Image 1 (cartoon, rainbow, N blue to C red):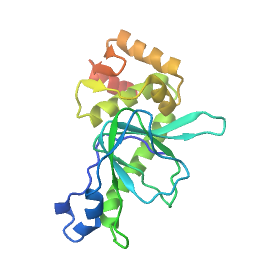
Image 2 (cartoon, one colour):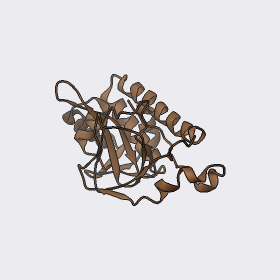
Image 3 (cartoon, helix red, strand yellow):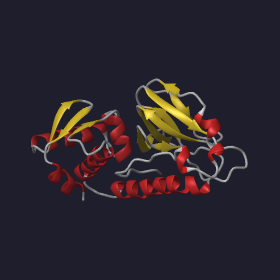
Image 4 (spheres, rainbow, N blue to C red):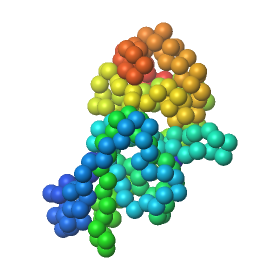
Amino acid sequence: MHAYTASRISLPSRSALPNRPEAFEPALLQPLGFYPAGAEIYAQGEKAGAFYQVEFGAVRVYRLLADGRRQISAFHLAGETFGFEADTTHHFFAEAINSTGVRVFRLTAGADMSHQLLPLALKGLTRAQEHLLVLGRQSAIERVAAFLVDIAERQGGLRQVELPMSRMDIGDYLGLTIETVSRVFTRLKDKGVIRLLNLRSVEIVKHDALHNMSE
């Protein structure tokens, strides 16, 4: 599974690829793909062979379990990349959370871009490891606190955090029910740690307290 980190991923610019700028040239000329809320970007089992960057909006990556439940493995925000696979098949679904713009990057056949792609792949591995650590925590408040700290850092460390995902999405990501997620948000609000501006916007009032809860 993927997980989250505090840093964003930027694609290599042409100036950063002096030896093989032509490898990304076809991708850079592709038009931006627009996806309305809930639209599928790719499906589990489909052929892989490209990677994606969120230009605006947000993406959830998930898998459907045998009993019909959904497990979200990652959220990707503007400027972040996703879609890396170890083989030629997608093992997860990717779906737009809200109105989202995504650019597809396909490599030129025969081009060796391992040097540029390795750091991006390692970011994904780090996210997977961190997500497993969060899921291993017993306390629901620890999971939600870690989630809010991460989202805040990925949005530049601002006090006001925008949450494009629903409470149900957050629950499916953290292994909690929607009721538990809602109760934890209310508890954090009552403690004065956060302010709930609306369903999709949270102000972090006591960042240190929230960070301590996440550890």
